[in-house]
Length: 299
Image 1: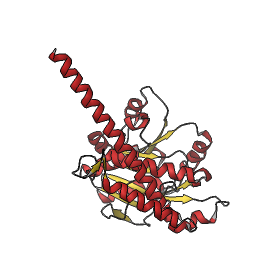
Image 2: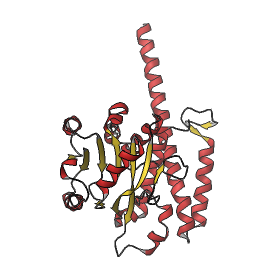
Image 3: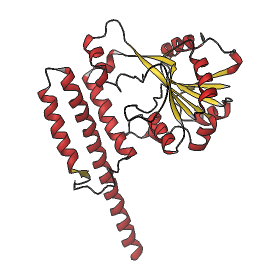
């Protein structure tokens, strides 16, 4: 059985549309799956309840505002039967409204993130290419046994006021670090809406800024602990990159194709710098607190 979990929060109209598209599935008997809708703003035992309710050997997570291809369930079922994979990232195609500005479509390649897109074609592919991003929470599926082993979403990210909501990326990274087999499935596709609010400069700035903060949280490249020349807690090379991309954005201000790659990187590095400074202040505070406690105990 496939357990389909849909977190939702204050979007009943989107949820209704999404569920209507889901229950138009073809190719599988209705007893082959279950749908669990989760209140994503709960502070009670929602997570424990979901884990207790789900019965499937396969656990899927879907966004509440997507439109699902009629063959999605069948594609997921065939994927896990034929590949031996532990997890699957499904195809996500942006759904553009008719009145969306033309420049958005023309520059979609450098706006992935604010535009939710995970499209590498129709075939199954292993996540072994540097050109492939990790699975996206709008359409990701796991073996239940794998989730029981590596854990579910890190709920601490949901409540940390300074950390962006990137619990899906953190789970995917944790999966890869556990050396599990993850693959992309092009036939398990959904459409994710591109809303106008995501296409404002303020939203794009915030998204890449938060991405930078989360990059430091993961610290896959040892930026926090590595042996770098630093100004405070920040490696000097990050300040150099900040200047380079700031100048690049200014020079490309009359061409969106030149502007956004630099501006997005500039916003990301700003988030990295701010998070590193925050980490530095936390370490300093902890050190002062430990020193004070030592002095008190010494007396």
